Structures are given as structure tokens and as C-alpha cells.
Length: 578
Image 1 (cartoon, rainbow, N blue to C red):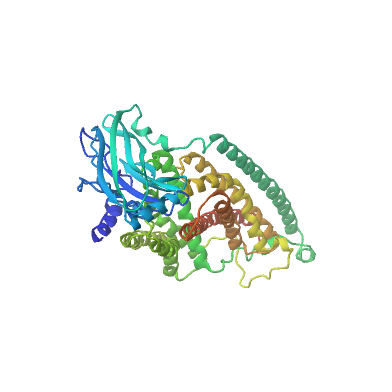
Image 2: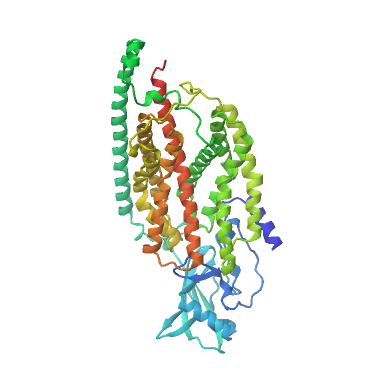
């Protein structure tokens, strides 16, 4: 265990996340390793256990020339164990008996339970995943597949295709000795190495016509919203500017008797610091970082096809998140300084550990259930140590650097209007203009713009589909940000026109409310689109969906606040204030 802990630490700090597990190049008769990964119920993808938790037996070969495990493997519950089967490059193997199992009552019950619950297992050859079923039911009898036939395609010195055929069905009965066999057939293939993962993709599910139709609808929504925002706001503001210009030409007596109202009346309070500035600035800093990470990882996935390498997408996300911690510190620290904050060390610590504590806290709670179930999703202690080291020795120093930089370069307040010493009382307004109502309504249109893509993303993560259409995801991501900014600007203008200057939190939460609708949709997806069951799968699903929704909310909230902040500064810098 200690050696694995050291390996996890060295993996992240010394090995690039873009490195492959192997060179993927083999000479004739060179060792090819068959890794046994996990086994679990078909309908509960995340409820996985080590392959040998079922009473399978291991082959006679004991040593291998290499072994590699990454941080992302441990976090994803990947437990690679050597199968013990001897496979050499281009060397056919006839039907070979590699081990036997004597079915005691306990082993018999374990296999029966696995067959009854539709267990299937996953293996890897040269990073290519292979799936197979443990057995099947027939006429209320339970049968176990005992023969594995591997058809491996090669192109030059590289493996480009692997197919598994399960054969030889043996009826499960107690106190019977079962022999497990395998055979390997090598075949020359015309598949190019860079195209070898295409067989795992499902273009029928990710229909491009549906994606284009969805994006077209969302794009039309964007055009409508941008046009609506431009027309309503510019027309209204033009009238306001004209009225305010006329007000400057009349004397003070007439101005006092005039019927002034609207957003100009709160010019002395609109740039007042938001309540709870430490939390607010930390959320905005984390939102800047998340937006940067999501955009960067999507671009990397498009350029590098990260889905073709096991764990590479998660490894890239961890690396990019740690490397962009200075972005969090810069924007969070500068905003806190502009709000007049004094305890900047506390703010920096909250900003640095807000998301890691949220993620680790959720994972820690789910980990207890995983340990109780003896599931492979239980995060090892060594991985926890590695994540802690990343937070302390990478994320914290970079956040501190960014925070100092932000305070010195962008921490000076430069508001176009002077802030009054005494806050102006907020007048009564109609119920639909209250901040809670605006917050609830603010997320509806942004959620509508990503609704269809959410279905594909959910299915790829919670079912057996590999998401690979990252170009569409990038377009949807840009549409989401655009719709969020437009909707939040409209909501903020209505709020300010009602002479309510509490726009910072309102704009943030109105944009972040999109995540609430996503989480509500996750309930619908769980009960009507999946067949998941059991405490572990339910806790895993709703726990990580809450985490996903929270991260989405922080990101959307930040984008909405930043767009609204630019709008507010623009309108108040244009109007001449006495």
C-alpha cells in the first residue's frame, strides 16, 4: 500500500498527464498484458467491484514486465489486476485451460447472485476496453460462461482491435469443479491506430441531426434574446438619457417637484459592496477558474481526442484545474480588494479551498457507503494523500500568487459614481420584482438552451455511452454563456428600475439558478430514464449530480455577474451625475 501511495504522488508531479500507459508498439512475441478491471450490475454502472471479488481464478503466469496506475484510475475506481493469462504479440493460443474453481456453497451463491443481477465485467488489452457477461439465466437455471475467445487485430506493430466471444456455458451447481479456458487469435487488420477507438462510439445515439437541430433552436434563442436586450434596453435607456438630460436644464426647484424614478435614483448605492464579500468574491474567483477549466478541457478533448485514453480526460481536468488556480486568486482577490475587504488572507484561503472542500466532502461521504459495499469506487488512502498534496503544494501557492497579483494590479476601486455614506431605503415594489422571484425565473431560458445536450451528457456518464461530440459541447457551452449574460442583464435592469440596488447577489443567483433546474432534471432522468437501484448507486448519483449542479451554478453565476457588472458600469458612466 505504501508503494502505491508513493506511486500516486509521483504520477501527478513527475509524469505528464498526456503520457500513455504504454508506447503501444510491440515486437513479435512480445508480452501483451490482459488486465482484469471490475465487475458489477449492468444497470448500476458506478457500482463496481474488483474482478476477483467474484470467485474467478487467476492464470498461472505470475510476473509481468510493467505496471502503471494513475491518479485518475484510482479516482474512477479502476482496479487493474493481472489476469495471469499468457498472451504474446502475433502468437496464436489454442484452447488452453488456465485455472479451475471448486464451487463451494459460498462461491456458488456468489456466482448465482451475479448472474441473477446481470453482472458483467470489464478488461483491458493495450488500453482497449473489453466487456463480457458473467453468465445468463435460462429456464430458471443459472449458467456461467467459462471460455474466453479473443480475436485481436493488429496493424504493423500496433494493436488496433480486440473482440471477446464468451463460449462454453456451464450450469451452476454446488460442489462442482469448473475449468476456465481461453484462446487467442491474431488477425491482420486495415484499421489505422488513430481510428481504433471508433468502434466503441455510437453515432446512432449521438445523432448529429438532433445536435444541429438543438443548436439551431438555441442559436435562434440567442439571436432573439440579444435582439430583445438591445431593443428594449437601448430604447428605454435612450428615453432615460433624454429625460435626464432635460432634467439638467431645469432648475433645482423644478427638479425637486419632478417625478424622478428608475435606475438613476440608486446611483449612490449601486456600487455599494455586496453583502458577505468574502464568500461572494470567493465564488466569483472559483467561477472564473471553472469557466477557464471547462473551456480548456473541451478544446483539449476536441484536439486530442481524450476519450480514447483511459482516465486522460479526468487527468487533464485535474492538471488544468491545479494550473489555473492563479486565475481564481486573481479575480477573487481583486474583487475583494475593490469591495474594501481587509482580511485578504482569509478570503484567499476560502477561495482556494472552496471547490476542493466541496468535492472532497461529497466524495468523503460517498466513500463511506462505497467502503461498506466493498466497491472499487472507494477511494484509497494513498489517493487522498495525493489530492491533499495537490491542494497544499500546487493550488494554494498559485492562488496566493494570483491573489497578490490581483490586489496590486486590479484592486483599486474605480467606480463611475460615488457611494453614499448612508444606504438609500428600498421602496416597496410588486411581488414579481422581488429578488427571489427574479432569481427563480432567471435560470429557465439558460436551462432550455442546454436541455437536449444535458440528456446526452447524462447518458454518457450514467450509462454505457462514450461521449465524443465535444465540438457540439463547445457550441452549446458558448450559447449557454451568451443566454445567461443576456437574461441576467434584463433581470438586473428590471431590479434597478424598481430602485433596488442589491444587484450583485441577485445577478449571480439568477444566473446560477440554471443549476437548480439541472438538478431537478436529474431526478426526472433517474426515475424515468434509468434502471438504477440500491443505496450505493442512488447516493453516488444524487451526490455527484449535486456536485455537478453546484459547479455549473458557480460558473453560470460568475458569467452572469461579470456581464451584468460591465452593463451596470456602462449605463452609470454614461449618465452625468451631479
